[in-house]
Each structure stands twice: as structure tokens, then as C-alpha cells.
Image 1 (cartoon, rainbow, N blue to C red):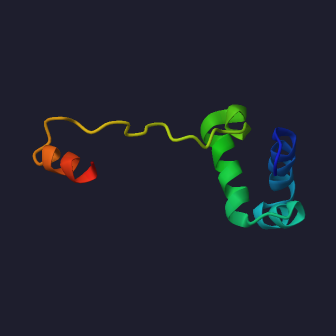
Image 2: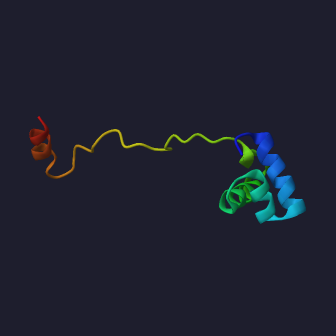
Image 3: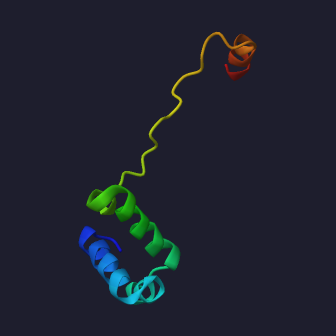
Length: 77
């Protein structure tokens, strides 16, 4: 299920055939099919769109107030 249209087709098949047969027909696991079905139920059609795999947050710096930070900095240099 690489495309939005493919995911829509999967959802239609789930409604007609059931989860397991639709997943088998699509060549994916029942877990993946359940994921797309649940996303549609929870988020609507937008849930079938691709999502970024980029993390929502990344820690870019260490807070300077942390105890022992100066010793750690010396060890790194």
C-alpha cells in the first residue's frame, strides 16, 4: 500500500471482504491493514495520506545548568 489510492482500495475491500482477506489480497499483513483502517476511522481521509518519518522533536543542545556539565565538556575536548 504505497499510495493514497491503494489505501482507499484497501479500505473498500475491507468493507466488502473483511480485514484478513483484504490484507491478503493486497499482499500486506493484517496488522498493516488494521493500521490503515484505524487511521481512516480516527482521522478521516487525511489519515490515508503519507506522513513524514522525521521526528517531531530533536534535542539539539544540552541545558547549561546541568550539574557536572563542565566536567563532561572537558572530557569531550
